[in-house]
Length: 330
Image (tube, rainbow, N blue to C red; front, side, top):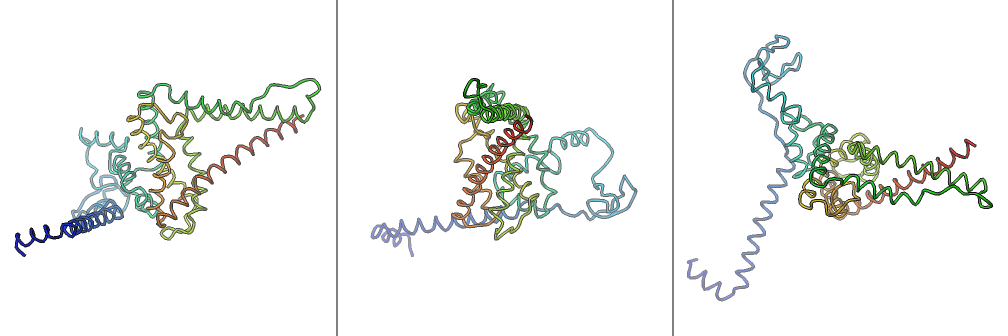
């Protein structure tokens, strides 16, 4: 078909031409998306196996490959130079073979697939999750203190103000019967203990995240137990997946606080609105557990509801224990 015929066809029926253009654009977008998803699933390729013969500097064993089969030392170990010494220093901060930046990048681009691969044993390319959480949390706290001075004081003060309704003054006179005094004394004991816990979490934000996501691990293990991709994950696997997700949320919080500069979200565990936390977890769980989108959305909502109910049960249980402790001590 000549250019003139194409031009005449377009002029004769412009809607058909527009539909063809939209169809071609849609097909190209689907092709690119398929390539992107294939890359997400593939992950980090294994390093090439060296064909050279090496002599291990540790055990003097002669071998072929990347690592000594006798003691496990890398074939790349040499005498110390300025370059190798700098590499050793960088490895402490996650910039060596098990790269922290690479792990954080994959947690943003392909979080569920990366976490799933880690649980299945593909661990060498990625930074250890708990160590990463402490480093990312330290960076988050430092950034918050620079960008929003006093943020953590304000955040925990808000929680204490909400909790202050539980604190009561001692009663006396006709209304001061034993049962009421026991309950009020127990509630004050609980309030003092909760204040201590909040002060501890204020100084140890990473431990607060580990505690919170340990509860998430219990809930996700129950909610996603029939996953078509990874059925029956145990509590340890769910725990480490949640630690990875906590680091991911910390990185997103860093980005949000730099853009927002402390104007909102003062009472949130992560510096972002709730709907953003929900969407991030939806994105993670969709890749990690393999359910359809709508079912994953419902299961993600169940995880949040379950976490809230679990936390309420802990609070109510601790209140009851505080009252019981006072009653037994009398």
